[in-house]
Image (cartoon, rainbow, N blue to C red):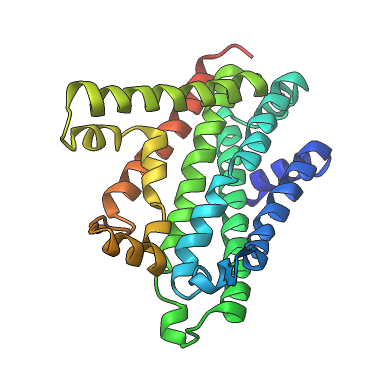
Length: 278
């Protein structure tokens, strides 16, 4: 496996666009820290975002993984272009001539996906830990290392999403078309959800129960929005006579669905390469 991973890392080493996009991605994650400096002035009232508890342990694990996951498209571009370059540069055919099997080729790509997801997860962990130690009102060890399942969910989410991108790269061969297909698929999922929610099953949870099995929706469900957990939002809702009853936990069902999709995407990538005349 190390041999296969080394082959892919050598390719990325000489890919300037991949290095630039990856660098931009990690820089944008560090920009989460800039949220702490945002301050609003309403007359004599000063409102600083960092004072609202978004960097408190353990809430920061939920908040930062949710925000960082929005930026995953940058690494998706790297994954898709990595596969497209195999066709345009004919390195795929050369690798097969040199003795690499199609199964090993797909495995090498999947190992790269795992490495990208792992590095990103560790980076988010580091940024979150630093911000939490600076701004959090709670610094007890037990509190700091609670709710760490959000990091696990973030890792699974990236692996699943990048595997989807890898599959699209194998299927379409061109990075621009693959990314376009990804956008179209997200729109299709949204349209199907809207039709189920407001046309066929009004006033029920059937739309959510069905679409939770869709690939992008299942990945989105891994880390639910954290904003309604904030004390200020909860207080405002209570004053208006509203309450939030949703659960923010990382649920085993959502993790299982994403893992199944991941396996399917990698298998389908191999199946396409196995049948395709290169």
